Image (cartoon, rainbow, N blue to C red):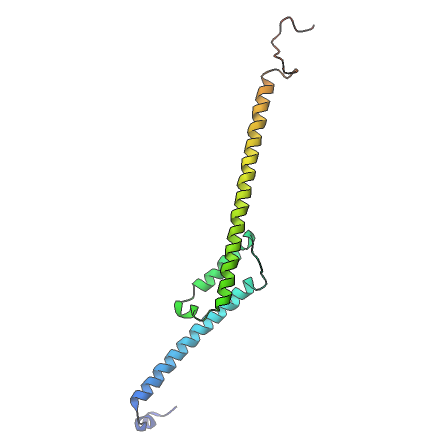
Length: 145
């Protein structure tokens, strides 16, 4: 807050430059802290009441992780570690649920395909015998008129 003239009487110019450097560093740290705090607030809004995750939560959790990853490394220093651990845990749960659901869907698809193959195979055998008691209907003496 000293005027230019007053600064010229200040005893140590190196001290003034050091104070200015520290002030710039503090301002940058404050900006990093604020960015991390804002990102943490957004992540908290997404996962705050989530105790477990399923495959339907994957998109929300991916967006939350992007908020964290978009921070610079200097900003990530200020991001709460506990919140990051919870986010990673929930992502793991959602991914595991997704894998389980995919296995179930694959199993169901295979089961339906096998059922269709059995159905088409049995209908092929029935149609080749004319549909009367499993005997061929080729005419001849066994027919009644």
